[in-house]
Amino acid sequence: MNSSVASLWIPLPGGTFTMGENADDKFANDTERPRHTEAVAPLLLSATPVTIGEFRCFRPYHEPGLPDDWPVAMVTWEDAMAYCTWLGDGVRLPTETEWEYAARAGTTSPYPWGDFIDPTLANYLYTEEGRKTGPGHRTPVASYPPNPWGIYDLCGNVCEWTADPWRPGYDAPGDPARRVLRGGAWDYLPRLLRVSWRDALLATSRRDNLGFRLAK
Image 1: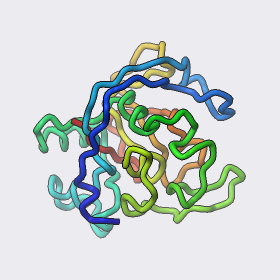
Image 2: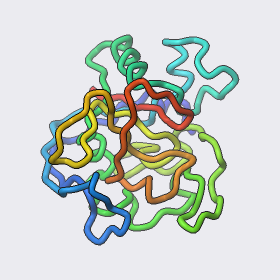
Image 3: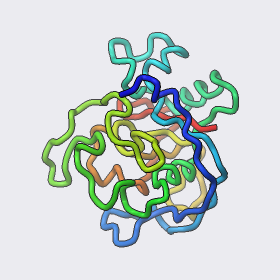
Image 4: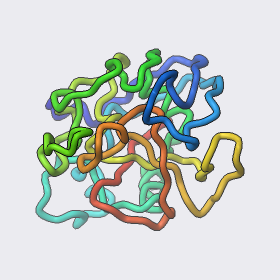
């Protein structure tokens, strides 16, 4: 990995896209429905999740002993919001719509690179058949190929907090106590790395597979 990648902002064009389950996706579920069209304004998105080294500038003793170039984890949604406030300059968490728009990068398949996944493309632990295939821990950001818009680690490595309150379906009311997660993680199955996959945790949750990236 180029050590400068983590600090890059990727400019994303505005546009519209179809959000939610992919056609003929056997792993899609009601949380990804209904499919619908969304418009997104131009924005900047960080090329990678926030790294441990970057987060240590804010909290110096976070995750002691782990490499600076791993994506940060063990951060709550509230921690992520506090980090954004500390950075200032309009930095924030992406909305879940912005996140999926960025992850798709103009594609319409379950993954940014097509219909299938293999361990050269993302950090995940098991095949769908239950065979261990991944390293079993986080890996340095930008260790895997970027998506078509030059963004790394949107699928796998760490799940990512987004700004939005959880809705169990796109036409359901929101729950502000729980915040949307996207992207899947190093200890997940491939089906949970699909760009339409979504889940949520309480905003106070802290896990070793959960980080975030930045938008502005």
